Length: 159
Image: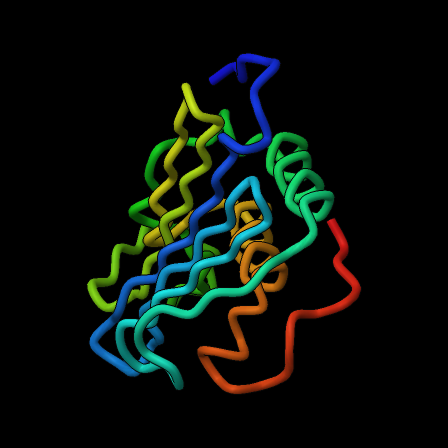
């Protein structure tokens, strides 16, 4: 997807949703808006359920958007549903297996510029750069304070 520029910063929205597995994985959603507002909503297996609000610096949000562009988020597949695993067989051969387990937590990322929306569903097998984006969104939002009760938003962000 080719991004149409210019667009207003107030139209920028980046949302990360994490769904449950059969275990104790946290389920929540965090949305970052162009005005610097952060809205977290905890569903299950988190320290704080319900809605919480905070703010981030708009420059950090623009840096996050720039990072998403640089890693090719807008060109990624819309969903990643299976992965590959390299294993050694009984005959000492190295094999590549396609795996599709049924108990993985999933991540959904949505980035909207107002008139364009890109969504990626990461159940299994997403590229490392997608996983890094998921972690970076959580870091910038300071999600851990609501999920685990550990610390505030990290001061140093690396994109």
